[in-house]
Amino acid sequence: MATPQLTINLAQGSVSFAFSPDAARDLQKALAQLMQSLKAVTQSSGSSGKPNPQKSMEYRFSDEVFLEVFCNPNIYPSPFAAKVLVTVRSERIRLSTEVELTRLIEDLNQYLEQVS
Image 1 (cartoon, rainbow, N blue to C red):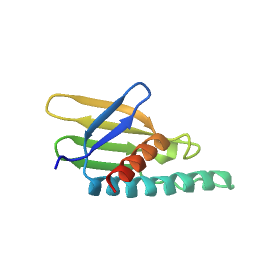
Image 2: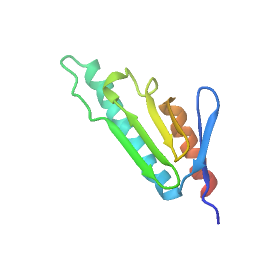
Image 3: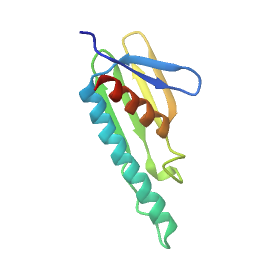
């Protein structure tokens, strides 16, 4: 059986690659933690005082392709404004682009629904 394809929608176009359901669940957990960090930044900046810096999120997956997702939650005013840097790399091609966090979460959820 072939490995299911994850499709990430970009500002212009999309990229698809083989991605296992287990890896998708790991990425989903990392994105959930990122959302918590973004919410913590938003809440602390709303109160008086200095916001507590949050740790950057970095997710890596390597199989047929290498996938890296990176985000610094300290630079976005809200989770809905956040973007992540996505790098998809194989022996022949490398793609690095920013993707809206909410779009990536939607794409990942759609993939997990399809493979369940």
